[in-house]
Length: 97
Image (tube, rainbow, N blue to C red; front, side, top):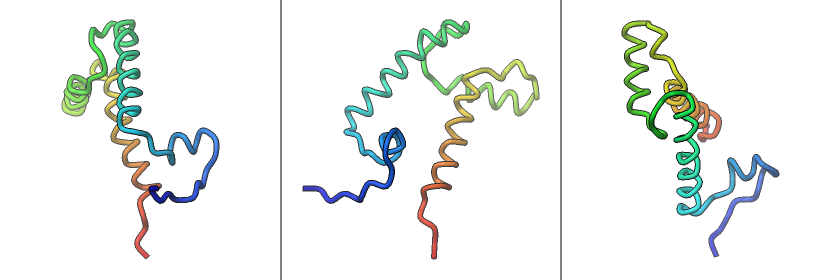
């Protein structure tokens, strides 16, 4: 038996932030998100799936030129990855005593 910490939260907060998922289950969930991203991105005129290479290049182009034509949902996805990572590590990292 693997030791576990006591559950602090309940409801959706528990399932999103505390529960540990099997790597295959997490991979399948990410696959479904990517699968849904494909037709959703095509409906906005972008022919591609869930990728961050082109949005990252658009972000750099925006930072260099200041032209708003480079800002789209992909750039917001890249910014969300960075901001979400920062917020998570700030909220949930152990504090030195």
